[in-house]
Length: 108
Image (cartoon, rainbow, N blue to C red; front, side):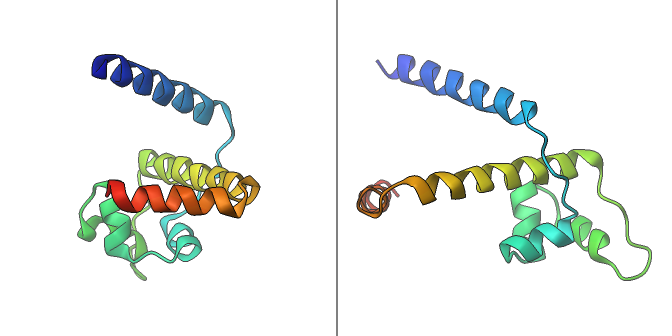
């Protein structure tokens, strides 16, 4: 039964990834992303799985490095997912949101 659940989740993730690639994701510079989501540079580094030193090079006032395209693509995908979540959250009635939040408290 567990193996079936894993296969099902895997298929759902694959479908989501295909959907994400099919939509046009707006590229955000890390500076814009951190401002939009009120993240620190350390949080951004953790989100992308890179060192804080690398992130700091993107924010440097002098000799700033342009992030590699793969990091810009990743930020665009995350931004699109968060925007989709925001739309979904707006459509879910508050009493159902409360149930979901309560369930999450017990699962963490």
